[in-house]
Image (cartoon, rainbow, N blue to C red; front, side, top):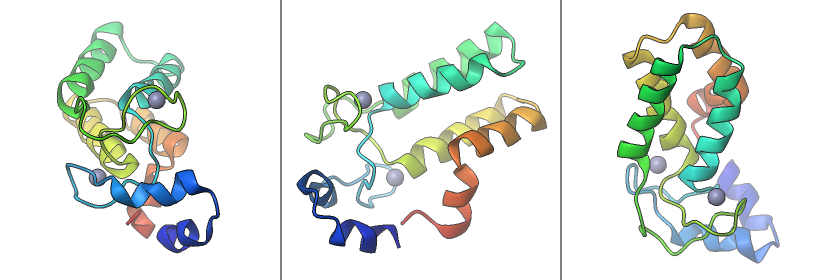
Length: 128
Ligand SMILES: [Zn+2]
Ligand SMILES: [Zn+2]
């Protein structure tokens, strides 16, 4: 559904997306956003959660360690227009969700995460 939408979008920036493949799932990256921009969004969201600093740091470290692929693609992020894109939105949030569970974040936090990032929508409809 999303792909069909992209095909009829006359924005050349969006049409270029099909070139970049996500290194994790091998599907085209439909939202060229860099991990650093995702992290910024994550940090804003985390500040609103009742989560200890230690846990936050652990989560951020895990994301930085596992989800940043430097110079993976030449596709620049549409938000900051500076960093390159490393993986698709689906994989980013899917992995973060996994880390949240692995680090024993509360149900409340998990729900808020899904709400905030619409992870559930990706999960049900399937982003690709
Ligand atoms: Zn992916
Ligand atoms: Zn960016």
